[in-house]
Image (cartoon, rainbow, N blue to C red; front, side, top):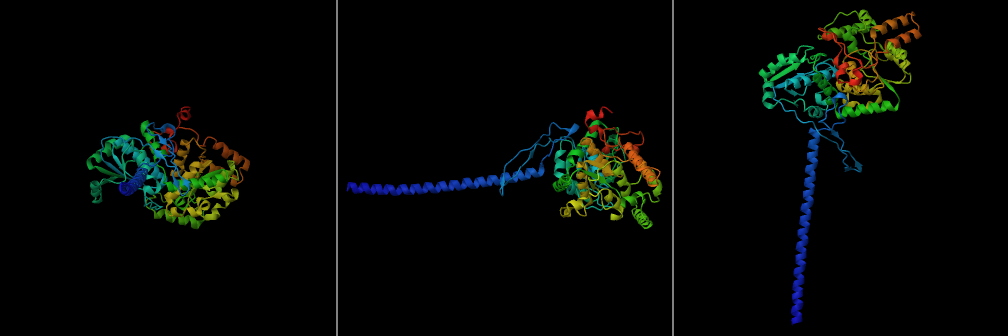
Length: 503
């Protein structure tokens, strides 16, 4: 009996042990499930937070070069290994500059006019003005009514998040007005005016700032060339450079395609970027018809009269050409390239729109240089997203122009000037600044037989030895700001001191 009771007790005790084991096992599984679920939830939150941070704090690619190095902004490349479909990706983090704390005097809205580079310079000026008036800048509005009728907004061309974040230690920039002020503007309560051209910062303090304080919001339109080239404090000039050479970064889509274009060109050897301004709109605007048929000259004249904001209507094409005020023709350009000793095997990248007269007018250039290329021929299938967006296409040409072995503009428009200054900033890259007035004289003498090829070539070379984008100071002309050298073509205040101090 004792043995049986003992056996029953053992049996009863054994059954209770199995139940306890089962209960503990079930509890452990629940705890494990909860732990795993918590891990998944935590990881999801981390991923979303990382994505949110990346949206508002985009990565800095490089340190600000030259005199613009900011000790409080230190870009860091943080390699984070992430397994994704068998591939590893690198994630970058950046320490943003601290926000500048100041009393906000109001809000500044600006509308930029013109092509890409005219608007680019205006943006730099308006950021600088906003900073020194202690006002909040609304992301600039880009021109959609110019000849090119490009529908692109700021964020379609420039990395708007980076633009806002990289300048936050200087000026507060918002995508749009606060709701209350936005409603007032939509109801028509807005003071809008064009600033006076070539004004110094005192004009904005004495004339514009009181209006901002009175109306809370001021809209400045036609903002090109509204800040002086010279006579400004050094910190203002340097901020203009910081905006231009750091904050105005193109969108990732434009940057990636621009790099692809440069890679394709580099694989095929040295390349020259030729900013050949022999486009229909430029010829109509300038009134230059040299080499055109009578029918073409009439067509260009009609186009000039069709645009009321092109004020000059009656133009003497021959006189203007002799004064060096016309873009060189493709035929003249071919002679100049040969005279300068540009190797026939070099690629000639055309940074411009369609040439007026098509292949007929390009024949002399393509005969002299067989490797004439355009972005449309290098990456035709990848340009579909940029078609009918002239400013985005110009941004691609801008990137290629900066990276070229030699940059040669045939007319000194906004792109020619801004690229010239950017190449100086990047280390005085070779930029041939053509003396068009002298060139057309030499071309005419060569063509009428009074100058041999040897003498023509020697004369062209000699006249351009000191026109290669080397260090120089801007020319200042008191009381004639429009005739002064352009700040963005030669921002010598922002260039390495050792290169400028010897001048």
